Image 1 (tube, rainbow, N blue to C red):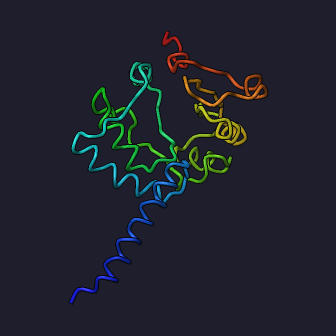
Image 2 (cartoon, rainbow, N blue to C red):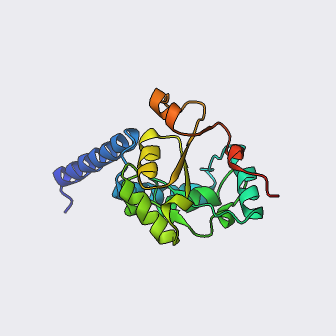
Image 3 (cartoon, one colour):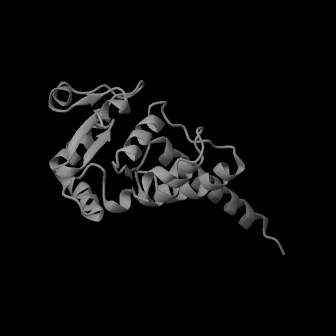
Length: 185
């Protein structure tokens, strides 16, 4: 026999869980488990074509330049590695996963606000931190990467949080990723 009270309790619990997940996502919580859940949810959205990954217009030309000049590009995101791969496989410009050589990092490497995370990534890449140029639009990440020994660059995009005066003085700022591309000659 079906217990109506049990069914109602289960439905209320399900709605509570959904509300909690939405609140965490709305607050941009960087919890590894939440990002893993997001990746699983996005998988069906990308597969159906309902979701398409947005990339800035300068991103693909920058990737082309890096590929032509043997510059490795890696991704360190608070999104899970699975979610990163989904996004880059289903962009408005098509599948661009070939540009990353499988080098994706997420919060399993540590918090993006802690220098140790960037040292872990450099070690995983088999390079010294000072051989890495790290680009982000978030000040806390820029400082952590710098504190780890990486060369940190601030990417400024429309809609970003304003930068502090100190950050503007301490770090190079790019408004296009193409500014990172040097002359190959």
